[in-house]
Length: 152
Ligand SMILES: CC(C)(COP(=O)(O)OP(=O)(O)OC[C@H]1O[C@@H](n2cnc3c(N)ncnc32)[C@H](O)[C@@H]1OP(=O)(O)O)[C@@H](O)C(=O)NCCC(=O)NCCS
Image (tube, rainbow, N blue to C red; front, side):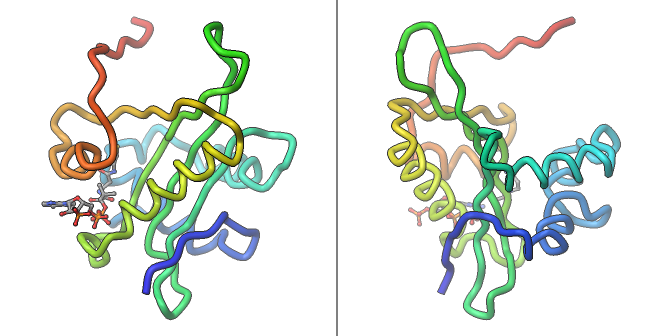
């Protein structure tokens, strides 16, 4: 049975491995391992637990209590709403635990967090070639007609 809950201080070691293990992790899979330093990861983890910072993480655990995935999300102000919006930053399930519903459960948890935090919108991006993620996203969301730019 997979369950989802907010991240807690005791999760640091297991989350760290899921986040940036050199052999298999979110940063390794998404090609970002070299660009995120351990001190950044340390800061990111502490921000999840800081109630003053609107950066959050949820973890998926199996029936033995082992962490098998996570989602990170943040809220931010905008110009067209008085409420905040929610942005889903990262989503990861370890390879041996995929296609068992953890990814969908993590997303549903994030959507419930959007409701709890009074965010009318929740959006996210993915690599245009990430067909696996898009199979899941097409079931829980609608694709927007935007093109993402970054500073040159
Ligand atoms: C994307 C990812 C989070 C999906 O996690 P998951 O736990 O395997 O997803 P789920 O088991 O909840 O699958 C959800 C739905 O997508 C479909 N799906 C997921 N992976 C699939 C695959 N490889 N082939 C076919 N369908 C797939 C499932 O059939 C399922 O449909 P259902 O809920 O109607 O049964 C996972 O593959 C992953 O961590 N990938 C690497 C990191 C990544 O790319 N993250 C996204 C970055 S934007």
